Length: 94
Length: 422
Image (spheres, one colour):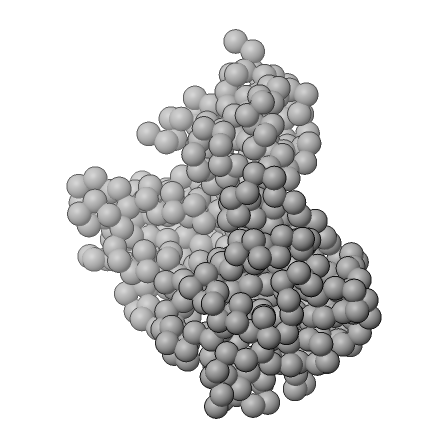
C-alpha cells in the first residue's frame, strides 16, 4: 500500500500513514494543537497550514474551497477534516 | 448628573450619540458590571458628509437614534464605520442602514462574515479598509488602523485626524456607566478599566502590544472607546497602562535558554501525588528545564493562571472519581480562557480505581485549548507499581525533551500510533 510521511512541525513528530488518510485522522491521534468543529468541511475550525508537500495532497473540493475562501485562508491552507494525503513527504504547521 | 438623552460634544462637530445601560449587572454572561455599561457611538460631521462610528445594542436603539437626530439628518449620513461587529455595537445597524440607505459601510476584512451573519440583506454592500486607508468627510478625515484580536478578529480603530480623536472600539474601554461620560468627570473607574483588560484583552496581549506600536506614535487628544468613559484627560496614560498590563503578571525567572514545566496534581490517597513526583523527577533529568510541582487541593485563590501564562508546559494529574476528573482540575482548566495557552506543551496523568477516564478527558480539554499533547498520559490502577512509576519518569523526561528540543526525531507508523491510543 502506498505510504505518505506527515511531519507535524511543532510537535516534532513524523507519522507514516497509508495513502488516502485524512489529515484529521492523524492530527487527532498525534495530539496536535488544532481543534475540530463540525468535521464535515463546513465550519472552518480545523484550518491547517501546509508547510510543504501540498502537491501530495488531494485536490480541494468545491465545498472545501468555499470554506477556505470564506475564512480568508491562503493557498497553503487546508481543512484537516477534508484534505487527504496521497503520498510523499508532507509537513504541516501543527 | 444629566441622564436625559442628549448628544454630547467631544469636539466641534463630533458628538457622542451612544446609550447608557446603568442597570446592567452582568455583561455577556461572563463579566460583572457593578456600574452598568455604556454603548458608545459617535457622530463626526465634515463639510461634505457625516459619519456614524459604531452603533449600540438593539435594546438601546431608540436612545441612540434620539441622540443621533439631534446632530444629523439621516440623509446627511454618508459613512458608517463599524470598528467591531459584536451585537452590542452592531445591534442598531440594520435600522440605521434602513434609515440612511445611501450611507457607505466601512469595516475590516475580517468583519465581512460577521456582517453577513448579522445583517440579512442579499445584496449587502460594504467597503473593506485597513491601516492607512482614509475617508474624507470634508475638513474631517477618518484614518483607519487595523488592530485585530482586540478582542475579536474584526476589530479596528478609527482616528479623526484633524481632532486627534481615536475611536478605539473595545480596546481602552470598560463597563462603567456614568452620564458625565468623560474621564475627568466620572467616578473612579480604575477597577473597571483593569477588570475589563484582564477579562477581555488579556488572552490577546501579543496583539495588544502590536496595536500599541501602531497607536503610540499618534498625537491623541482623546480616546473614545466603545464602552465606558471617554478618555480626554491624559489619553496617553491609558496606552502606557495597557503596555504595563500586557506584560506578564509574574516575571518568568527561568533564563532565556531554560524552559518551565509545571506539574499540577490532586490526589485522594497519595497515588496521583506519587505519579506527579515521578514525572517531576523524570523531567529534572533533562538539562535546561525548571520543574515545579503544585497540589491543586490548596489552589483556592492561588494565581496558577499567572504561572501557566509564563510556563512552557503543564502536566495535570487527577484521580478518576465517578468517571470524571475532579472539580479543582476542571476549575483550573476552565480558568485558562483568560490567557493565551496555544501551543504550550500539555500532558495528563492519574491514578484510578475502576476505569481512569479522567486522563483522556483532560487530554481532550488540553487539545481543545490548543495545547500540544504529543505524549500519551500515564494511568495507574490504584497504587502505582515500579513499572508505572518508571513510565511516569519517562513521561516527564519526554515532556522535558519536547521543551528543550532534544527529542530524537523518528517516524511512527499509523498503526503504532493507534496502538498507543488503546
